Length: 133
Image 1 (cartoon, helix red, strand yellow):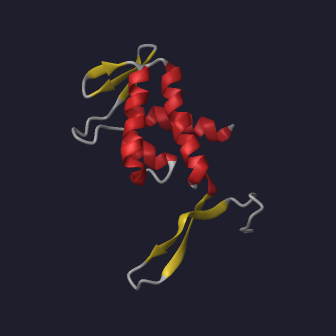
Image 2 (tube, one colour):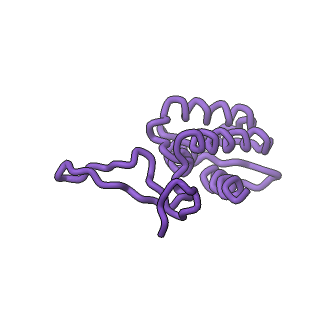
Image 3 (cartoon, one colour):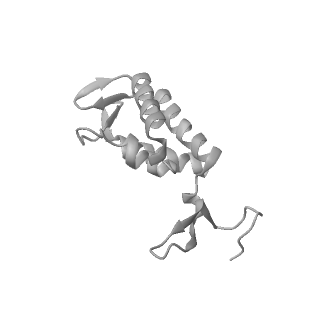
């Protein structure tokens, strides 16, 4: 397995690169490149997901109240602006911030063309599509 700056390796050093263990010695944390959405690419991925919500024109069910796609995107932007430290990847953004209400624990839902889908599932599908482009 070649690791380096060639960008062709299937593995990469994860954001932050160092993780402390119980002995206070540092070790590198390796993750598949597909899970390493850091820096600009992380921010770009999250912004693209939020933009996909707006462009979907789906309704957003948050705690039993229906909201427009634009309102949903504004809410997700607000949550990201307040909780960036919990979103070290696009997957973490989905799982920790965009999937459910942090107060009630109620999962968010998107209603598109009469079909209801959990927001986490909908966003993961969009993320996979984004990465396959």
